[in-house]
Image (cartoon, rainbow, N blue to C red; front, side, top):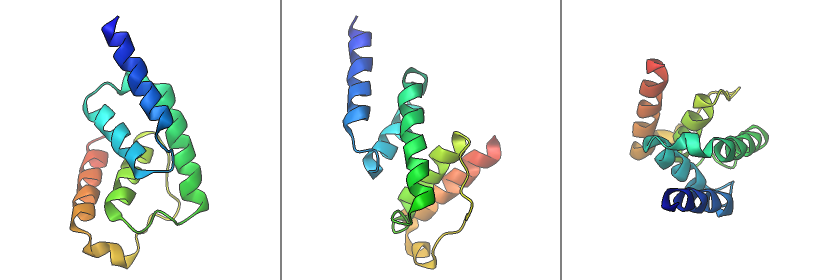
Length: 111
């Protein structure tokens, strides 16, 4: 009973967090790292579909390499692909983001 309540609370939070925000990506990443994402498959899929639509129609998310790398990994894991596949040069100075890119590449190469 308590477990079901906790799952519903997490689903509620996922639905309440703005879908175009970086926070929702961090939440999905945390849920996947905890290996409980199968409980939230429909919610995660809906969020990632909207994220993909945002990415292909706007360049608003190109300022933070860590955010770009996380979004790239989450979308790539679910089978979404970026047609451009390039980062802006100014993102090369973002060390945290570059580490995220390296982690993304490692995870993708392992699959």
